[in-house]
Length: 308
Image 1 (spheres, rainbow, N blue to C red):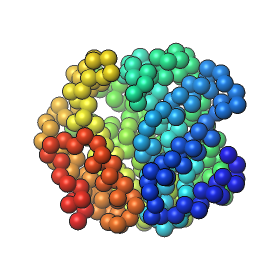
Image 2: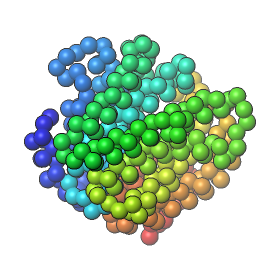
Image 3: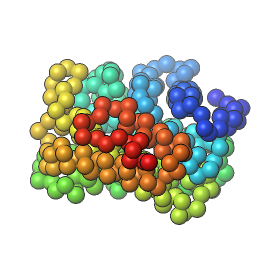
Image 4: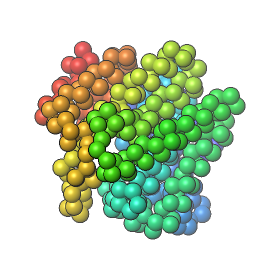
């Protein structure tokens, strides 16, 4: 897809159906993924991991955060797609036998199961490269903006971001962890890409640092809420083979605090995150819908009432 396609994207303006925006995200990811015209195992694995069914939360957050800053259209689309590529790469690596040894991801065999560990690792590297290529070659951004976007994503990937969070999580069984340590790891593994989405949206929209800081705070709370919800949802769940869930036997916020305290903290993060947004804005509406669409823990408060 060339510049004409990008120009067409800017014609979609808020408010609009989030499903329609998600459909455009899917089309753009398919266009940016390699291997459309050259099928080989490596490119097939990249497309398999990137285009697997998903909610596309990170690119949608990037686009909707840009709307929160007052930017019309889908100018932040490629920034969000780059974040989704990094997320897909992190899932490939997270599932490897040397990491979490997961056999399934997003309802299908994990990439290393479908293509082998060697191809899966190379696919993750390929996705990371494709993410930075997407940002550095995005013609809709000026050179200074492209440099800033690349720097934000690189920071999110490093030892103070995803890599550091995965390391801490892998070493968790080797030592007792406090609740604060677990929550810090959750931020690095989950929240850091949400924060990157908010920052990149602000850069694309030309927002002030004060406004970007406000969205960083929202994204931090959102990341904690997502991880706590996953703890509640996955703690006792079995995978597609009937084997115990990935948190079985692990020290998590749920195992240390219990379900009621985790739910209380989850409610607090959601409320704090929403408090910094425009109540009638597309970003707040979307966040409420995402949490309400997931299997609700019994004690979770009504998010419509939280925002009121």
